[in-house]
Image 1 (spheres, rainbow over the protein chains, first blue to last red):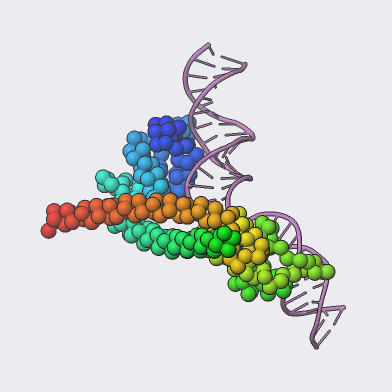
Image 2: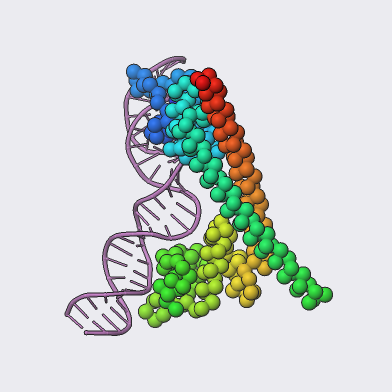
Length: 126
Length: 126
DNA sequence: GTATGCCTTCACACCGGCGTCAAGGCAAGT
DNA sequence: ACTTGCCTTGACGCCGGTGTGAAGGCATAC
């Protein structure tokens, strides 16, 4: 499978696949002409990468998952290294959730105050 | 008040204040020598900017708040334009919260699955 | 031969809020 | 005159995943 085909099948672009390769996540063989040649298993790997990216992981975080898949496991997240990353990311997400929740409270307060402000003005100009 | 003093009082840097000015948020007068001269009211403005930035607003979003303050209001968020931005940001935050919550669920599921996976292995090698 | 369409590497552009370095002017003390 | 320490403008760097070229090689069909 050439890079264009894999890109299409994975719903992404050749540029992106080369970028993943540059970061050691995907390792195609090379044809005689220098073209990258991917075997079918790589499609699975790319899907794993894309899913994890969508969940907010960085490419470095994703490496253990890919390694886990390559080691023959049926899922990328069952290996200890992956679990460590999962826990770290979980904590991070919890942090963001807490932070966003605080922000939400402040926004709510400001909106309420703005509404009160307008009501007071209306009472003054009835 | 010169830029260095305002920066220190506002807990930020001259570079940052110049950046705000470049984006039309702060408008110092100029001394004869070309130095920026800030009056005390600007400290309040800079504080407003910093608070809103910390709540995830972009500099463009912040403009109406500053304008509201300059218009003589005792808070930057009581003007209609500010309220509009507040609502938009609130919706955005809600979106992020929903998204992060979904991600959290997926992480939880993957962690649980990893734990089950290990237990099964342990039962096989007792 | 040439048109088409894949592939290759190299490298700049983006976003946003700054940090940071460069090169120079102004103010004041010694 | 010289140092010190503020100020000025200008411009590049960062981060991270990708878009988007440029310039060229290879393959296949006409």
